[in-house]
Length: 254
Length: 352
Image 1 (cartoon, one colour):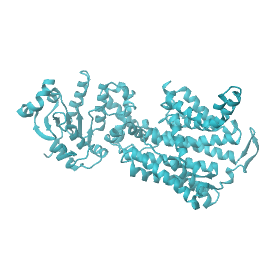
Image 2 (image 1 turned 120 degrees about the vertical axis):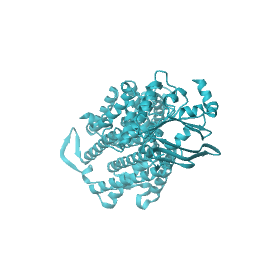
Image 3 (image 1 turned 60 degrees about the vertical axis):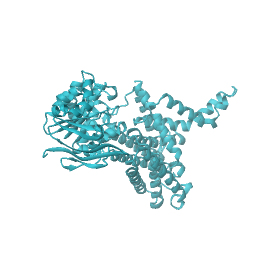
């Protein structure tokens, strides 16, 4: 796997006696969208947290471009190219939409320790932020406070923050959860657009089978924290074990 | 130009603008508008506390960091000036050295406390500051050979800043043109510059990061900000500015003691001023400090008037007895926090 951007090797975390992620070894290549599926409690979000650094691994290692990042602080991983969106909307509620995106670009450009210039005087940052908002079709709401946005627009902003980060690895955790039928396609189209960029890897935790079918190049199935299946969508979905145990119920839900 | 000076941070309320202008003009012309030693004392104290409270607001209102060591930093600046003046003799060099030494020492101590405790949890930082501040207060009162102990230190400041120095003959609007007047304007302009500096910092890229951290530190870290560094930096800046405010206080009073600079009562006053004025607004510090200190200084008089006015009514004069001023101050605070949970500034901006 010469072109693996992100790799986990025997990644494990234990909470007391419970093994939440169990020796997961997996590599993610550029230009590939990997859907991570599994029943609730299978360890999908925990696996994400281990990669982006919110939780420290008990054992095993994480590599980004062959550099080990297992013990690195979250912010450092972000600067190296891990971009994480969250399952529950996780924004800066009392700041404006534009300010939320500006903060991300400002972080990327290491401008956070400027004490005596005006925050909105850096037009390069403001323009870049405005461009991102246009891409996610939130430009009309730039001056709104985030707490005043609809749920769907907050989810879009969540994606906008990730696009603004311009990471090597995009990590989406149920990006369309709770979104209306009108809003969800906007987010899915954006992810499809990102997929077209062959230098990035995309990881997607998702329950909706139609989304997985239309976007995924590969499916990784987690079960009780361990890797249960890994392969092209058609193959994984067709395998009897996976079909019965995990996907059957989800298919019925759709 | 004016907008640049206030860093584009408009008051965003007409009433608030008027109040702020009134406070600014009142303080700028205090020696002429309110002649008398006592009113000048009050005005100088308001100037100094505006800076002190604003620096606390940078930490609490913008960074979301709770500290109980703010009077310690204030005291470090004050004792810096006092010790320099005692040991170097009276002179401006002593004032400058003392101020700088106090500010640097405060920033370094804040750095140590911050790096040691901010990476754990915010509540841990609050506890540590409480412990360190108490330890320093005890130390200062015990090391009487150095700090004068409970009695504090008296020292001389440059003659140009004392009433004995007349820089011009005659009087202007019936105010004698002496060093005390110069001293007041030293305090006023220093406070004004420091306040505008803090206003700029909270509107800078750094200030926005602090707001982001206060809003959601988890996400701030996830988009690439090392939260602990930003919190520590905010603490250091806040400590240094508080120390400079302390230095101004020492220059103004020509005396330092544990009660006037280090006591826990002042810490509580600062907290009340921030909350009453409105957290995370900077302008709240101006209003909070002005309202609080005026109430502290003049409520007793007001009550004496009320007591004599109601002398013939049964029972009522008992309530207005000037000795009960603290009770009324307390009532005022409870009411203001109840009716203005976002502070006076927050309330005025909502009612726009």
